[in-house]
Length: 178
Image (cartoon, rainbow, N blue to C red; front, side, top):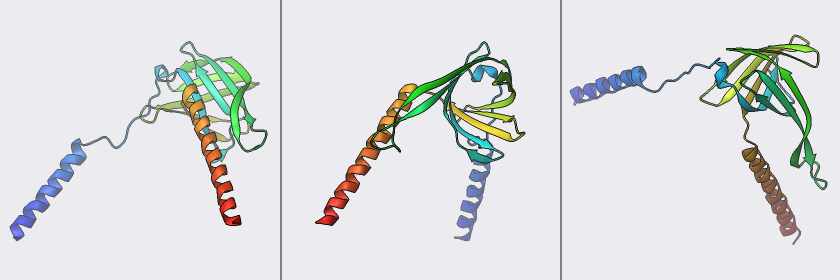
C-alpha cells in the first residue's frame, strides 16, 4: 500500500511540474505598438498618485494618422430623481494633432504639453496612459474599448434596475403599513 501512495505522490508532483512548465501562461506582455491603439476608447478610471479621482464621461478617438479627438459628455438627469442618469449629451469636443509612436503619445491641449507613456492590455482590452499632470502628480488613466450601443444598453438596464428597486421599496412600504 505504501508503494502505491508513493507512486501516486510521484505522479502528482510530475503532473504539477509538467503543468507549470507547459501549462497556461500566467503572465502576459503589454503591447506598446501604435497599431494596437487606434479606435474609440472610453475613459474608465483615473488615478492621481495612486488615488482614484473623479472622471468626466469622455470618449477618445485615436486615428491611425495621429489625430486625437476628445469628446466630453454631460449627464442628463431624471427630473423626478436627480441621482438617476437617463442619457449623456455631448458637451465639448477637442481635436489635437499628436505625435504617436510605439509606447508614447505627445500633444498639447489647453496649453499643457502631454507626454504620455501607454501600454495596451490585449487580454483585458484596456489601454493604460501614464503621465505627469500640471502639478507633477503621476496620473494613470485606464481606457476601455468604447461601444456606444453597449453603453446605451447598459444605461437602460441600470435605469430598469433602479425602477425595479423603487417599485420593490414601495411594495415593501405598502406591506409594512398593513
